[in-house]
Image (cartoon, rainbow, N blue to C red; front, side, top):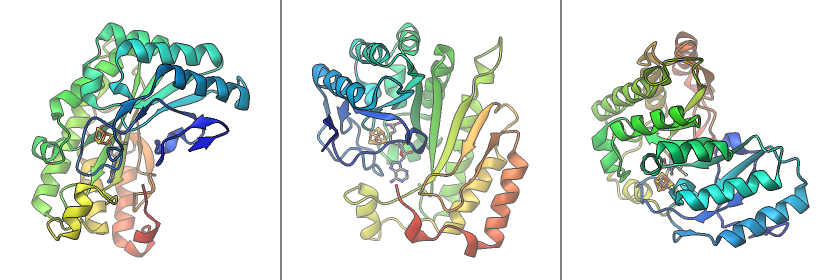
Length: 308
Ligand SMILES: C[S@@+](CC[C@H](N)C(=O)[O-])C[C@H]1O[C@@H](n2cnc3c(N)ncnc32)[C@H](O)[C@@H]1O
Ligand code: SF4
């Protein structure tokens, strides 16, 4: 698809917080094959750098030089080698001098594959935020979902971001274990533990702590994904909407006081109950809103209104 002469490979997906950003297609598809994800159904490629730069040139002509936020598509643009990523971020800064930040989705392994020096220079060249899929803090669930990463590696990726000045924003998938209560409890307790360990308090010892983000999403079943196939075959029984709320409550309850300056959101369209707050500061407030949702499930977002 071309929009005002800028190339996009459909379907286009970006985090809700990048709704007002200039979207630039730098990769297509993904090198990983996570069982739940819709992003890996296209054949993977890194687009030709000249073509990407041409799209940025066109965007400058169409939208002017006032662009403040840019987002690099697709599902895992952090896989691009450092030199190329630096060339693209630097070019974007050159064309759009008022650019505050560039964002991208980033698998934890592709953050770890870059050195501290490289990450710092990407930050200086404008890479301001990376959206990391945590999904679960439980290593068995991560392996089952085909994430090819461990909880410790995800924690390390968060710490590396804090140390380089890049803001990490992590997503957690509620309902990942289906309606098995025991597995769900372990998934959530391990996920809260991962977030507690990821906190910047463990690596930033001087000066003010950076802001970071954690969001909860509820598992969806995109056409063509492994989870959709397993669910259709009856091999995976989805978590109930009440079960999802219980998972969210357990998660929030287990966030420790070590978690500071963390903006929490569950306002993604996949969620049953939109929530916002700061972790760990607003723990009790968030839990009491979830309790209201559990008491009055009729007010929870109906199934047909959920989406990715
Ligand atoms: C496009 S992916 C990019 C993440 C990044 N590539 C990584 O692996 O860290 C963005 C996030 O959307 C969420 N997501 C993807 N498929 C989903 C589904 N079927 N249901 C709920 N959330 C999903 C996951 O949290 C995933 O990390
Ligand atoms: S979750 Fe991330 S790494 Fe996994 S398939 Fe989706 S985009 Fe790729």
